[in-house]
Length: 333
Ligand code: KG4
Ligand code: ZN
Image 1: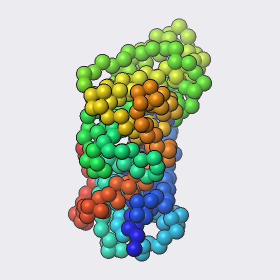
Image 2 (image 1 turned 90 degrees about the vertical axis):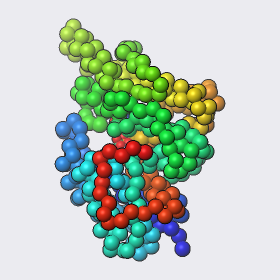
Image 3 (image 1 turned 180 degrees about the vertical axis):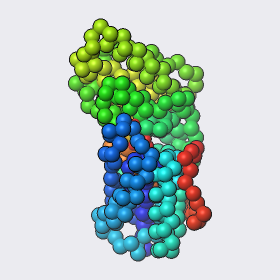
Image 4 (image 1 turned 60 degrees about the vertical axis):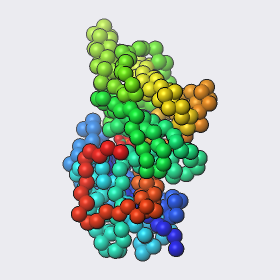
């Protein structure tokens, strides 16, 4: 009999469900929430309510697409954290009810660990040990991965995450939330001709709050002499912002590969969908003889396939949790 995992992801503003059979993804269905756009960021209460509306239909579609029956499911994996507590609560509560009704085990999954293991959703898969630059809306980390569930964080952001740097800059530029994909698109038509303050942190840590301040004062100064500066230069501003963020990430990633001697290099998380970063990783990889792993966009942004892959590894180790489990907003990998 096959081991079939149903996985649920609801840590932020995407409701996602996935079915995995003996390590192979059969379906990965995600409902995005548009409701946050007008607020310029994710509103936790709105996100939680949208998850409640989306979760049952999303799970139904995932099961249908996989061509399985509910009774075939061996275990349910869910994101326990880190994330927004009201959002997580919907996924955790659903998982508990589902596990009870089918009398199957539950598996808790760390969202950041899952972003790293998204690389095992399909080929090519990295070899251990590998380094993963995990860049999302809430986190920016360099992780050393020695086995599926053995990870060590080598570097972290001390303030904003890379995705936040994109999104907060987008706000200064009057772009919709999330601004990351919009900046990416506009940057492709522009030239990175403006420069901003670069962080200079010891070791493998990151900082993005200085960049945001530098961009703020740069725009303020330019707008004083030309009130239409943003509109007239939007493509070049976006290209410059994107280049600055990518530079900060690449400097530390290169440093990490030199310090560890590891040449298996992966990127993960929402910001790894960025076309500039994807290109840069390939270029540096060729120059430095790295084997690079860049997941399909579907597996970069929040998705349940990565929860399923992680859940499957825990299933093999029989790492189950019981009905007393509660979500956690913060949880180190
Ligand atoms: O991993 P993710 O989907 O959710 C979190 O766990 O945070 O990441 C979302 C972040 C947002 O900040 C969004 O702006 C950013 O990923 N993002 C991008 C791109 N696509 C998503 N940033 C830059 N370029 C993109 N193409
Ligand atoms: Zn994420």
